[in-house]
Length: 317
Length: 313
Image (cartoon, rainbow over all chains, first blue to last red):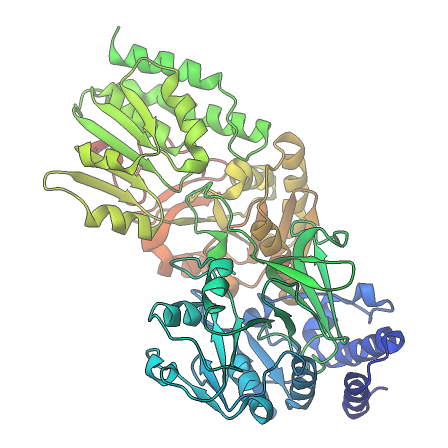
């Protein structure tokens, strides 16, 4: 397989009917194609990797610095952007189309998703938001999506509901909603919580937030990133489950060397559905990859202690 | 005994301390010793009086920075409280405990209420919070984040550059975030010097987020420039348009540049520059300019972040 169409079709077939024994070969074929078409990857590794473990993990910071992936900015594409940072340019994840994203996302999420009348997104409806895109994609099961945050949270839309709804919220939006003292959601509803819990000015306590939300409806957790095409899901309190086409590993943040299963480390994701960008992505999140492949998210790597007067490293990332 | 003799005796006791501040023992001792050497010049600055209570807020600064301020206040007849961050409470408690001079250390922020003068070193948010709560009559000298850069033209000065990068593991605002150099093999020369420096003054602890950031910048440098790394150090050759405003511990950024290019690159940042090191004559108004190897060894009498501190204190 040396062209995108055949790789796309092979990945699509894998997502529809995963065959774990075939994953490595497919990853290596996709990597070889990416190597030939992504100057960033080619600069990082002179020749394509011949073992999956040698596929370089691209740090998420590079998505803000460089045009990572096989899609040139001037060719037709869909772009998902990370939220802004102090350093200016957002990270950009470019896809020629969202077919693999949509297929994988819906197939893997389906066992967790409730059948509801309406999907209420506690997030802005931004065309460059992968999260909003994902939430819109659940409509056939969870009902048409409505987004309740623009400049402010329109929590009035969450009062007096008569039919089950699926509320999708980032950690900070959920916190804002909980502060309005909401009433429990109708029977059959569910709340999805995603996103970071650490902001520039304050940090949320995820466990307390989830406990409070569980008084309103069952809570399920989603872990995804702009730079990835696949997501992990979990019921609150359980480790996240990756789909069969997403392999998660943890490394020592200082050395980049793998840590044994069950030990905390910096998370990396090898995502077969990231065909148009780059397969292997290194996050700034800390977590534990369990022997069964499920993942406990600890949170963002802790800030460096203040030991000097120069700008904090956190402001770089 | 005069205040100077008491301060000098305090200096001798400080020299004997073993700071546990995240640096290697060798790095911490060298940094402390270098900072205390600058006090030789202190007797020349005793005449001006500074009575009253000065609180030094040490929120985000290298571990030795408050010492010279404390010494000047004490030698001029004042008393000092070090408002220490919790992570550094042990170090500043040791500093205050090894003298009979009127100096205390605390993590209690209420101490600011009682200050006649506040000298604050920290983030913009910290400084804004202090500024907002000043009482009438309280003086504030506030020092926020700054950064530094260097111009290096003579290969013989590689070790001096490495020392500027190594002291405080490069976390001080006087440490160069970037080295501009016309030397063709500057990254290789500096890599050798960084390796020698690591043997002499090993790098201390690196936080997980710092380790991740160094590896991310190594990847960037491999794509757009060059990267050389060894245990405890890295040298990243990057185009000048990727001038960073923050340093990473023992991870140097080298920009290929002539002197004019260096000046063009740093001048827009002048209001936020602390120090410019150079091995050719250099003067930039309001910015401390010094020789390579001296960037993090500031003399007592200097312009500190644009302030003639010995005269305004």
